[in-house]
Image (cartoon, rainbow, N blue to C red; front, side):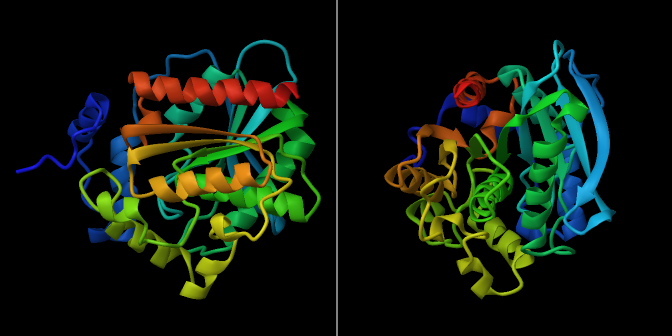
Length: 314
């Protein structure tokens, strides 16, 4: 039999050996959320010197409906740049705790404040509510970053998977609404289009952590109907114009159903005159950057950190 994974990186194989998750599409919403927490939430004390604060900030509907955020501040002087971060999980699962480790790694690598946002999740809160929450959190950071030792004049947004989708949507909204000013966007294997028929969706349909069937499950719980999938705030790749958006770091993995739409978004941004780093890891799988001890993951985080430093320096 021909090996259909000849270029799978040894570290990707290690991830696949480590991660034992039932297929998301076979679970209930509560079951899917609990499975991810069981995998990612650790009781081990963190090995860093970050100051971590849990805060409630006004949501898009005002202070009566607050959002929870968690701020990670490196040691040293105030006025550090700020990365507003949106966790992955298909808009359905994931929370501040599941992405605590990744946010710590990013804060340390980039020497910036990371504000992780507990946006409201589907299916209880469908599109566009998570987008509205993400935008409200970014606007808050641009006005109140000093509360967590950050510089309100140096703001970036970022996220992984569905969180990358929200980060891209925030930049579109900020451009349309003339603020807040975003210096950079970090898109880790982002969802950019409501299209499950790309080459990478078919080539990587199953067996590599994120499956085509699970993405269909996520989309069905995020959107009220398929017409919403054509909305650029749900499918940023369908935005007619990407000019004037902030510079971007787009990380993609070759054995990921989302590879092609992430690569296409990087290309569209570049064609629109946006400065883009497309960091493609052909042999890797979805979520690889979250693993602290893998060389490919460290390389991705260092690329993100360098791009953030350059953007904040501008």
